Length: 148
Image (cartoon, rainbow, N blue to C red; front, top):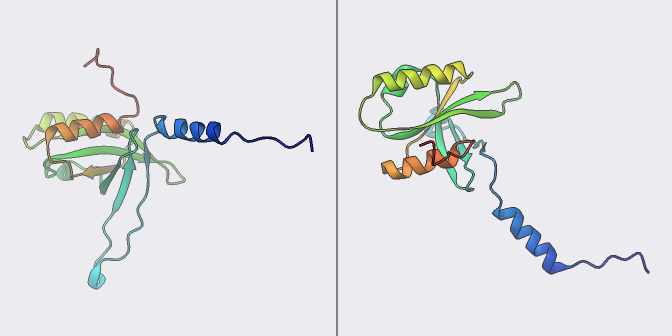
């Protein structure tokens, strides 16, 4: 009977709470999409979980300049996939309403040089402040306020 170990429930609950409060890694959570109504193809959707734990649903597109120019106000993620299909963020940016072609082309060039082949677009953020907060949440390395 001396081998029985007493379990401290309060310590276990505290540890569980600490685990939840730690910042999580940014990761993709693929969504299962069925074929659309009346035989139309399914929408290419996915979701990303930010460091805060918030989930952002995105449309999946090819990394191409025409798509980028027609996007409008959104959060854009350049993504590369490994052989097993695991997604990795290469770059994240907030796109505004104003056309900034030079900046778009530079961002696309950097994304391509980082190995990105897909563009994930989150269009549900209504304001520039919301888009900036999402970009900060999805960046793999937190931004240093002194560098900004």
